[in-house]
Amino acid sequence: MNIETLTNICRALPFVAEDVKWGNDLCFTIGAKMFCAMPLEVSLKVSFKVTDEEFGELSTSFGIIPAPYAARHKWILVEECNIFSQQQWEHYINKSYNLVKMKLPKKVLRGMGEPA
Image (cartoon, rainbow, N blue to C red; front, side):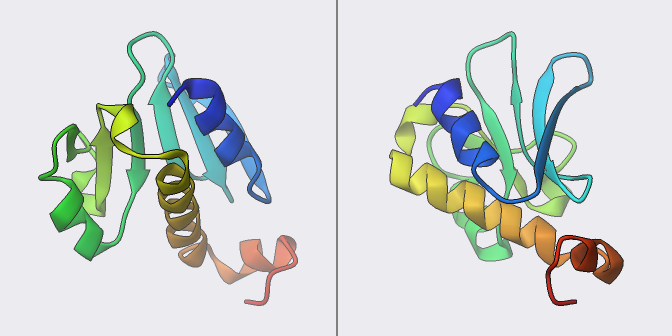
């Protein structure tokens, strides 16, 4: 897996914005809430939100750790990006996007044309 493929997966989702935070991390957001992040200047690693059940399973898998500073919010850090197929990456990034989107304020969702 490479950064171009992962960024394309994120960019394909509706209402996604991207920017560089903390001087080095490419972050993807919906409604100003982050759902995926990856550093730009080191080997490819990707952080994203998962469900409570997935967090328990994935955070103890090879190549994955609880995300520093965000694990309490059920974020993981994938350090070995080739452990997932492109289909799995699409699944997890879409899931993270939807988990974050579900928590957005109703006013923000209405602005996106979503039912609140």
